[in-house]
Length: 124
Image 1 (cartoon, helix red, strand yellow):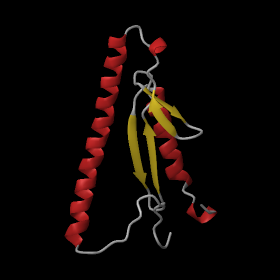
Image 2: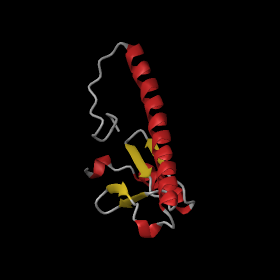
Image 3: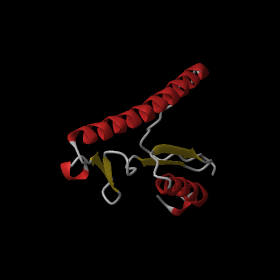
C-alpha cells in the first residue's frame, strides 16, 4: 500500500470499533467501506468463547485445554456457544453476499472482482 491508498479516517473507525467490541467482551465481524478503501475486522476471541487469536500471526484456533474448564461438560458448552457465534456470523455474511450477488446480477454488467485485494475507487 502506498501513501495514495491510505485511508486514515476509515482505518481509525475500524480500529475503534474493534477496540470497543473487545472492551465490551463481545465477538463480531465489522466491514466498513469508505470511498477510498474497505476495512474488515474480526473479533472472535471474546473471553467467553473457545477461540484464541494471535494478532501477530493472524492465527485463529480453538482454545479448549482442560485446565481452562472445571468439567468436560463446561468445555463442551463453551464450544457449542462458540460454534453458534461463528455460524451466526457466517449466516449474516452469506445473507449479505446473496443480496450483493442479486444486485450485481440485476445490472447485467460483468465485473472482474478480486475479493482479496484492497478496494480503491478510481479518481480518489
